[in-house]
Image (cartoon, rainbow, N blue to C red; front, side):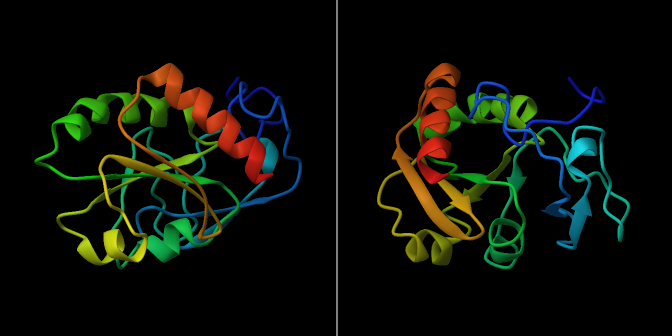
Length: 167
């Protein structure tokens, strides 16, 4: 699918082939610069116009209090955040599932992680009471939430529904 015509804004199973033909704003995960990427070229490995780093690395982006608003609060792509902690067994078991999802969902959905131990202010800001918790954001606004670890298929089904309801 990469490099072959217009790219769906979401992965093929999500919201059935909604093709983007207009530019998409994508924050750089390295320097937070907002980049305008032609929708038809989103899947062609775009790089940041400022720092020249890839906009998508095929893995979740680590967010902090300093980078959250710049990454999840701006841009046209939905951002799926995994709130987790290093001492949490279910979080550690879910980490490979979430990493695999990043490889398959980018560049249609940005996946990010927030370590609630290192970023307690973000956990408090979003009222995180149990971990792991997934939260889906559109331009900084939380549009869906799910507590608990899940397998890849369940994650994909939940994300499909959440994106459909957020549209």
